[in-house]
Amino acid sequence: MVTMENKWLRNLALTTGLVAALVTATAQAAEKVKLGVIGGAEEEIAEVAKKVAATKGLDVELVTFSDYVQPNAALNAGDLDANAFQHKPYLDAQIKAHGYQIVPIGFTIVEPIGLYSKKVKKLEQLPTGAKIGIPNDPSNGARALRLLAANGLIAFKDDKQDSPSLLDITKNPKKIKFYELEAPQLPRALDDFDAAVINTNYSLNGGFDPIKDALLQEPRKNNPYGNFIAVREQDKDKPVFKTLVASYQSKEVSDFLDQRFKGAILPAW
Image (cartoon, rainbow, N blue to C red; front, top):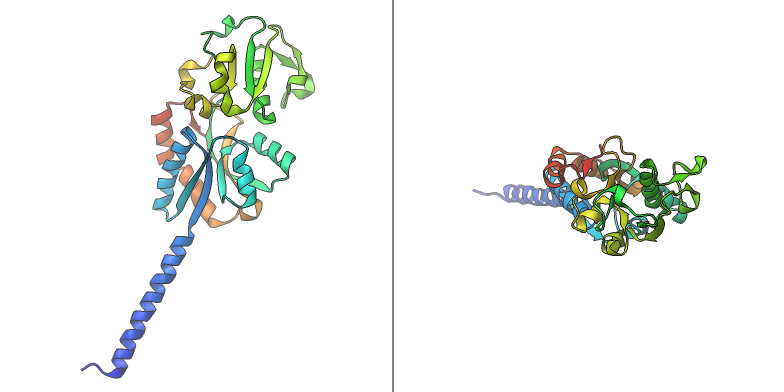
């Protein structure tokens, strides 16, 4: 016989169980981050990290961008929880320009920048007066110029070796003419140039094979331009971001980089 007391206890247990389930579901639903990435190759990598994160109880929503300017603005405004697209010199320049309170929390990938051409097959074939396109943001523009200087095409003032601009060029034996464009535009504008220094993600999006097609490329090892996950400074110690970093720095992502990009994009951790 079911007494009133037993019925009450059973209902209490049922209610308690429902509340516990609701609390658990709510806690699980809260483990979600909105991550900004650049469309194309970097989005592919983020998709793998997203799957790894899901196994760790973290739901990653990817928001794609087509240029380097918007992801930090969106993160700073609170429209994103994190982004994964930039290296330290770029972030430093963005902070200087905009006052962002954004910090790196963990390395992801490194994409050696390269010089590409549709008109010549070898560096020696570049003509005197060659037109070369470079990224117009200060950090990647300096990176492009450093690549050319490291291969003897130009030289800088001694105090500008780390962060040169076009104004710092002291030697230009081939009388190269430089043109600064938004980084995503360089692959599309390559027909107008003799060559262009293009970030790897955009060269891949443009149909180039960085391993086979680059006339010049940054060192693949000990490259100082490793990309990372960035968050707002007040959020840097949140456990959810440790999970996100671990998901990027996983064997699954490392294996995917090796299989999909064959050395064109490498782990930075």
